[in-house]
Every structure is written in C-alpha cells, then in structure tokens.
Amino acid sequence: MRIYSTSFLLEIVIVHENGEEQAIEYQGSMPERVVIPIQVTESNPAILKSVKLNNIYINTDKFPIVAKFQISNKRWPEPSLNFSQSGDIIFDLFSINPILYLLTIENTIS
Figure (cartoon, rainbow, N blue to C red):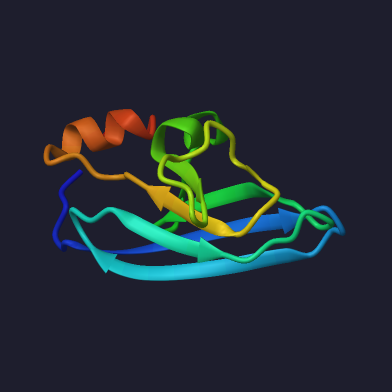
C-alpha cells in the first residue's frame, strides 16, 4: 500500500441512549491529532459506534488505543469511551511510519 496524499477524512458515529445516531466528519492532514468536541447530557449518554478513516473502518477493539475522551474542564482523558458529559474525543491515529500506522489499526497490507 502506498500513501499518495497526506489528507484524510475521518468519519465517526456516536449513538445516544435514546437511539439517536450522530455522524461527524473531519477533514485533515497527516500526521495530526484530531480533537472532536461532542455535546451530550447525563440524561442521554452516548457511546462511540464506529470510526472510519478514508472509507476504512477501524476495528472496534482498537478504539481504546486510537481514541480517548476528555470531559470539558478536566485535565486528563477518561479511560472509558462512554460519554455521559460533554467533552472532546481525541484521536491519535497516525504514526510517522505508515507501516506502524496500519499495524495499529490492524489492517492488512497488500
């Protein structure tokens, strides 16, 4: 696999307890730490359902490795990706080495 461009499209979907799905798209350039603010309430918490990078879904088992959640007004990210308060989802998706990046998200190299 060759990476021809440094731009990327990140698409995430979060699902609220009431069943509402919220899709968020982010266009950026590698390498970049992506911070996506989300608004949730304690009465309608949400979870991270899917993460798609350039039309490739990232394995859900890898969410704790590539994503962290930081509640607004807190200094450190939370260990959980269950969102009961507003805050930022922080994605560290890219390694300087594209091979390490692919191994991190467990995609095969062809």
